[in-house]
Image (cartoon, rainbow, N blue to C red; front, side, top):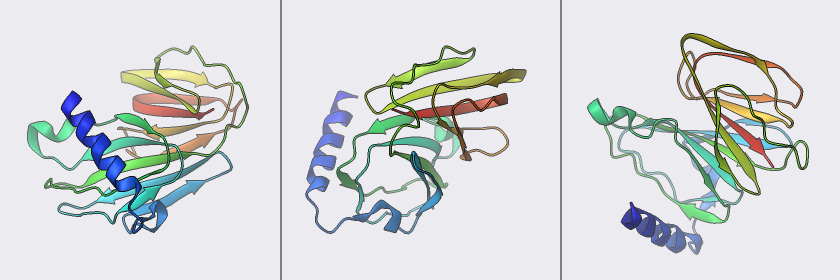
Length: 190
């Protein structure tokens, strides 16, 4: 794991200075699917064998893995992983797998409310918190549901599995949102 982190740091560092990188929304397989004042959401769908253009991520972002491009026993590895990255880097991604690789990339623009408190809600696990974002994971088992809930600030929900994997939905603060069976990642800009 440590070796992977070092290799990734070297790759990202070498890519930061690459002047030929295009903005992320100009990479052909990265499509903007939602935007408001608080977040911009890109759906990156990489077919088997696809190599992205070298592209820049200028804004802090959270990338949620929806599918990893693998088949068989490895097909579920890392699904739902939500990783935060500071903006200001460039990279390219290769799908060397036999299946589609898909990421939902949530660019953190600004919070709906400054200094909003973290929530303590049933089935919510706070996975990441820093000065820019909070990331919660919510898992609802078969036959279960979660009554309507809200956050102290607006949040973006990304379905990991269930009826529409990868579908993003923005919820303003104070809006009640029920959840049913499945797994979602909730991202609060700070």
